[in-house]
Image (tube, rainbow, N blue to C red; front, side, top):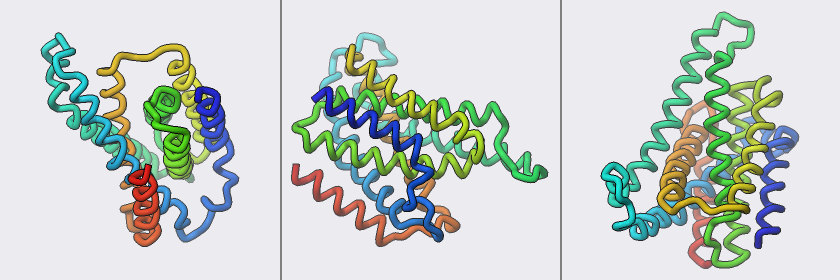
Length: 243
């Protein structure tokens, strides 16, 4: 299924490059599509990624020689929490930077803040690109579900990043995130990293997805839809449980 994974990787790239033109993301008040996307992403994390961390933890038992790494054998979920905290700290840093520049006609985060923010999301995308080709899919349907969950998640992320970095994201950010997908896919296509590295990256990714969904759904000004969120979550959960 490597060629299908490559097609899906190109799909992710196209989403980053052209999501700005999607009418679904331009609806004001906030498009219900984004709330549906949030529900799908949360369902994917809790019904697939987190259970997979449990499998990773079982497989790592007795394999890690180093004392500090051996700690991960029994506490892999701490890394998911760490991923959430990392992305929360990033968002807080970005907002603080924009407040310092509120005297400008169009307040924006400092240049170094923008690059740290985007590079972190590029690493996040790289892991997803790697999982696209190296995830242990049961069948083609499982890969399609992974693609659909991450596709709508990328659309929501793009809208948030574009709002946070209006000019810089379109000029630099979207290209870097698109390239990161292909780099991650390329690494997965030619090599396979050790299980403990994969478990760490998957845990951090799970925490990051949860934070990014909550960031888009909870603030009052987002005008998100609880009904749409629950619709996405329940529908995608049923699909996952049926496979």
